[in-house]
Image (cartoon, rainbow, N blue to C red; front, top):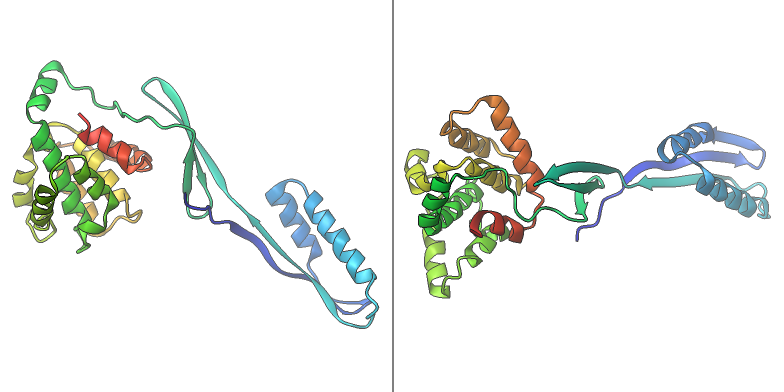
Amino acid sequence: MNEAIKRPVYKDTYKKWKYRDTVEFDNYGDVRKKVDADFGEAEPFNKFEKAYETVSNSSKNLDTPYSKSLKIEKVPMTKVDFSMNNNNYSVYILGDNSVVMCDELPNKIEMYKPTFFQKLKLSFTKNKRHLSYIKLASYIFQCDGKNYEESHVLNTFLSSLHYSPDKINKLKNQLKQYNDQMPYEVFRKEISSLFSSKKTLTFAWQCMAVDKKMSPKEEKLFEQLAAEYKLEKKEIDSFKRFATKYSMLTDENLVKEYLGH
């Protein structure tokens, strides 16, 4: 688990003496306000002050310059409550590096409920769809010239196919061609089975959200995918918010959601 990075609130000298009775610099008032504003109470700070005073008063070097320095850090936290599949969930976003913690997340995301005929069609095209998802993930991860083999997400998807090692290696070599050098019109034919469901949009955005920072090429690719459905901007933004929220799911849960049925 990643460790949340603390946010520095104050780190500096706030009071400095030239001699015992001669103050050269005093920022105590501002520091005290910051402590009260950020923590709502100052008991730890008061203890720090008292301990410092005890040490300085017991010093025999009365004419030696001395100062007070302080370092204050806090871990910012945002709680997000949401409901899914008639259940309530909470996630916590901690630290300046946005570490996510949760008690429970839905393993299966039921945003799209296919009709009977859609289910029938999906059952016949299962293997083809699974390969198409993997091709799409490969295309996204190599969109900026990156090496798709570095992606743990994609490797988890490949493992879910339960292919033999030789077949996996052969598929990996084939996946190298799915990158931004392949025209979108050509690539689209390779993943045509995915366009029967809008779920493809959330999958694409989730793969793009893995790197946290969206590149211009990835943005353009998502616009091309979204254009397949002729959606309004408001609905596209809704897909993005939904997918970003679930990009925090583990790789294993993403595999269950897209390749597990």
